[in-house]
Image 1 (tube, rainbow, N blue to C red):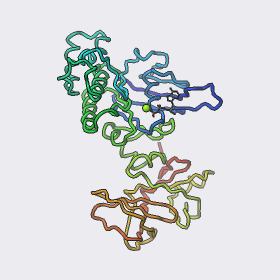
Image 2 (image 1 turned 90 degrees about the horizontal axis):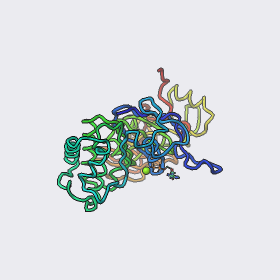
Image 3 (image 1 turned 30 degrees about the horizontal axis):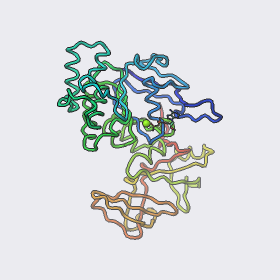
Length: 367
Ligand code: ADP
Ligand code: MG
């Protein structure tokens, strides 16, 4: 296994045009040795491009890729010792399942005994034992993708395994099972794994740490809890959670920031940041889970109009109009649902300030 470092990395597919579009905008990032990571982001944000750069299928237009501190830009994919599993199955149709799984091992010159035991082990984990002698051509789409994953997993000497949305073609029921298996394999062999997905649930069940990618950049790298509690970028707030974070455009005012008639108090550090910035792109964000809701006036809670309630079984989502903004609040099953008028407040601890889409920390960092 290896540590994978991306140093001032950027990629543009076509630099010849007048206004080159960067699929990867300059980034510095480290995937530590042995970690289980997810790379999460919407379609088109650059996830596959980044994986292909790490595996060597694609040469980056700028910057460096380092494995354990050694530059690998000029090393071809087959010498990088990386396994990659793609969205759609890559199998040899005319070969048996056994031979497909054995292929990467035989390529490495593994002994017959090693091939037997390793193929047997991986087939067992992926429930492929019964079809080992079948020709791959005769498999279902699910089975083919499992073989494809198995080919990525048979070698335990690889530096890393990269998965590019590997469960897309898999039946939902099986998805859950396979994800657990991947996690088990990670725990057993401790291989660095990077798992690409656009599904937050998939990301948080597989990974210890998630890199959220947006528009060619990693906008936050953190645990699922950090992404939830302290979204570093408005995109993370919006993308993580269901529904995502409430984000309100605000303006500078005496007490801090205001929207319409309402003012929102900021702490001293946030106030300083607002005053030090020239930007007019100011937002505050609060997750629906953290909005406090009452059916009667309460202290300096804001008065809001109830628009509608969605009952989602174990909880309800209340949509409220506050000034010109629509705010969503999550109510527990047993919580009283206000009619027409609600009173809401935003606990200071959970109210986040964003300048130019990036979070302003609640206090100055001393590190
Ligand atoms: P993701 O995997 O997150 O969906 P991709 O890495 O496939 O995103 O794509 C990132 C951006 O690069 C997109 O705008 C896409 O259109 C562009 N892109 C991807 N592959 C190519 C290519 N071979 N040539 C030109 N542009 C590409
Ligand atoms: Mg992709």
